[in-house]
Image 1: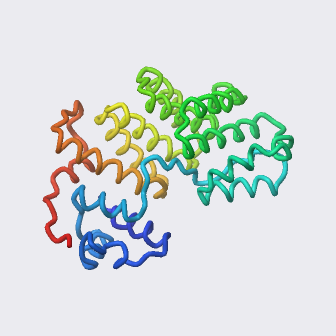
Image 2: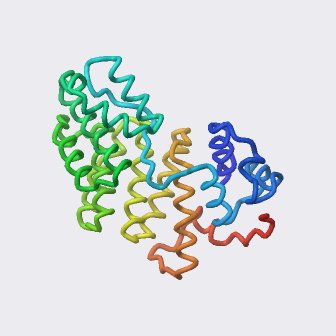
Length: 274
């Protein structure tokens, strides 16, 4: 847990927010400072409150980089700009423009094109059936045989998330297995951090809390071993919420040893909140 404070501080600074803005009505500024300097581990509810103030979203499946959707550099830059500003409505409209579609040429570009349409569908209208259709079209364009690209893995894991939202457990497990197959042979890409988070989120949606926690811990270790903090705040936020569910509903877990999870569970309630 030594990096929790660093992650919270980085997230706050990226949003150009002060400690007083984040801590107001949640805890004192001095407490937030202690957390950010790794002198104090917040309990689950305090961490949840801080993450909500930082606008961390469970279902914000955000890529670190971007993928080329067509041959035109300007169109690729435009799509990336809409995506990273989370302007999914404009991105969807942009992707559906005939002038953009006609410049989509090869399998890799087509795969990325349909993947972005799937993300738009998920974020805009929770259109799971439509997103599933786009993801299957995207995956059908994968041409690398048994060697999966990062984008193919992301397609598989996002399809797992869609199946989980629809309550299709067997399909969820199958897609997660596909996404992680021979991952150890892949060259590290920061977007691979998303595999662990989306897999855990998928397990969460089908109430497989033990698998969700196990996957989150693996993902955190995976990110840190590659000197990355990408998706870390999301992972910690999800873990804190699972911890609250476990405590409130007395949910049994089949796996008993979670180093990070137990540090949440055993934190005393913090009484200082205003």
